Image 1: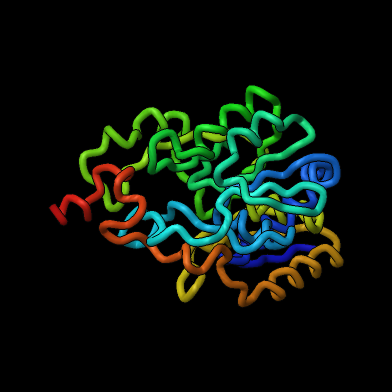
Image 2: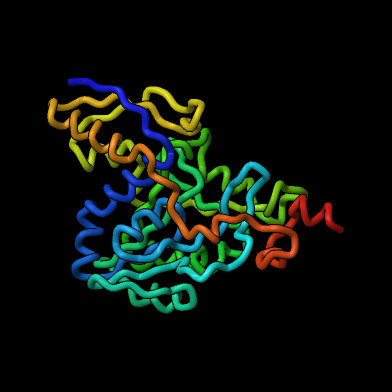
Length: 274
């Protein structure tokens, strides 16, 4: 049986979160190790499924640029889940990372994905803040990295090559904070992968974008047994009005004089304010 579906961006975040919880390495880490969550809207959706409060969002892309939060909300940005319990690791991540090993998992979102399966994480502060600086330990110590990223973030070109061209201090003027790119290599999970993980269908992306709430949406053709196809439609219908996840207070974007202004560089709005 063949079906065609539309997955909006908020629906995709929920599907990706559900699918990541079904990954063998994540199931193993939840039972026998640690799962470290670096906040983003998709990761916050996953975190909430594990009993973590809505997470504090950091940098984001909004119509007027790459912005930070208006204020530092009282919510975790980095959370560690272990044996059904969680704790805030905002101030302890470097210490947490050095204790991790192959039985643990680090889960992050991304800002871009290329056709080679490499994801990219934008960095608006030096080194990508504490989380960015800690990422290298994942590869050197053999810690599994899971990357939650929607198909709306698929870009042309190579993220490796793009990372050579970007850089906060190479930019003279930017809408919001100037950013660099951190390449990420790990287990990428998109909404396409999510549907295959959750239902067993074969998926093919056949279109993208739309209007009236479908901006950034993905159109997929799905193939499988009738029961599998019906389960996909049930999943999509159940997520019809799902909201964007993450701490509500931290969704408000920065203003001049905000907490991140001192570390953001070459921001158009800061330049205009001089």
